[in-house]
Length: 175
Image 1 (cartoon, rainbow, N blue to C red):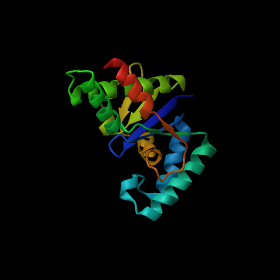
Image 2: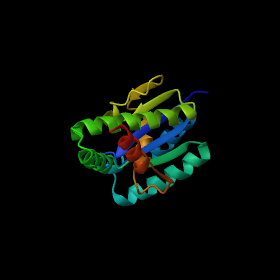
Image 3: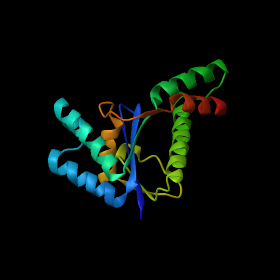
Image 4: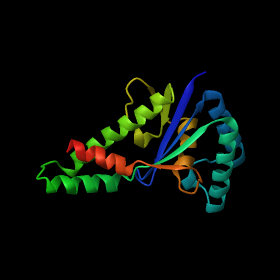
């Protein structure tokens, strides 16, 4: 059985949605939701439809054994705080360099998550194509990344993992 993941972000990397499951389970989840809602991208739906989609997504994902995660990254805030802290240390790193370092740290955290879940393929939204995930097959687009968009939105009532403080600490150690 092949394990795949889908990944998307919302609010400019404030949140990341991740789904992990078997290819069959993700395909079933996608088909069921697509049949009912036609559009699965949250920004394309009215508020009432978003709520219904989010509720049904959560329920169906549980039934099919698809793991759903929302990770709070708050990348802009983390980069800003790390850059300010680096200035206090008299560092000459640009804000752009701190951003690139933050993205590398985030990629490493996510890679470790995927490896621990024995993921073979990661479907990512096009804005995430900077992530390489060494050793994993990366596909841009696809059903799993479309479903991950639902997980990335606050309206979907799922457990949220806050990695922003951990990411900030990891960055500060490298600056």
